[in-house]
Image 1: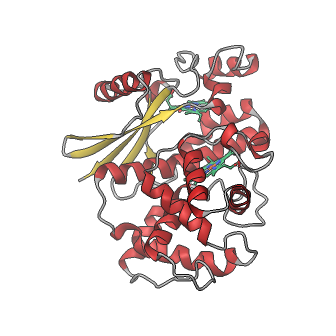
Image 2 (image 1 turned 45 degrees about the horizontal axis):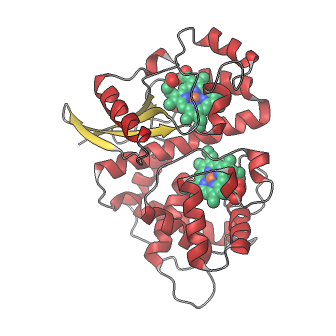
Length: 322
Ligand code: HEC
Ligand code: HEC
């Protein structure tokens, strides 16, 4: 795939930041108990950037990508009544999405499994905190509260002082969230083979249309690439080899940054789950013959089949101007 450029929401974010002071928003919930506003804001930011694209914040959403955030909250709160258990269960699922850990009734059968994404413990704690204390399950939340929280988030978004490894990860995860939504949506509505054509053609123009902002460039590469444009270079291969060795010994993978030609380059692992198998799994068994045929047509030099679950499929590479 070609280079992926940052979603336009980030342009907005930066534009708005420069002309707006931080707004006081304390309508996360309407009970009198004191709220940890910082934690709540942090949780909202993670959700807005990475989760709402698939889990609509609108309780009445009819989008067919995944459960709404309200459905998730209600299912988890019924099973894990106290805040600590609730938060831990959400965090556990996001760190290791698996159908066994799913709680929303029938959801994984309907929507499939969530793609793996990388978040820190602190971010997930904040997500749990926000979802637990918000009134996201109420009818009027989306019209009355969400716009204010979003404005507040946009005002604060890029004033924070983050490390490059952290910034790069945010860009990669935000892009993944959008691509993942499109891919899962296509598979559900038109099936694997049509989705594949979408990935082959549309994904490129889709990401190209997310215009270049803040001198950040994102691409996906692999040691066993499908698209010839996604072959990893020497530096990238070095990271991939190291990551594979760690993975085989059961370690959690860590992202890494490096300075190359005055730019900071971040590497972020991309792992497979069962959703990927229909296009990257075992040929003819997991990848259906009709899909195989399309793959051979679009990618005569395809190296990206034969994967199992939980393997390193490739990496995000985020190039940031210093
Ligand atoms: C519907 C089929 C389909 C599914 C499902 C799918 N992929 Fe792909 N994947 C593709 C195609 C097609 C390409 C080549 C895209 C291009 O031309 O840039 C690709 C490319 C990639 C690349 C870029 C490197 C390369 O090989 O060119 C990565 C990384 C990747 N996929 C990871 C995943 C992961 C992880 C999952 C599961 C979460 C997944 N894919 C699910 C079809 C699929
Ligand atoms: C690319 C789409 C996508 C993104 C982005 C995404 N998810 Fe998911 N998520 C899914 C799918 C699909 C499922 C499984 C089916 C379901 O429950 O909706 C799921 C399931 C879940 C579940 C378990 C629900 C259950 O069935 O019990 C939780 C909790 C969850 N996601 C939290 C998050 C959080 C938090 C984020 C952001 C950090 C996030 N998700 C981002 C697609 C996504």
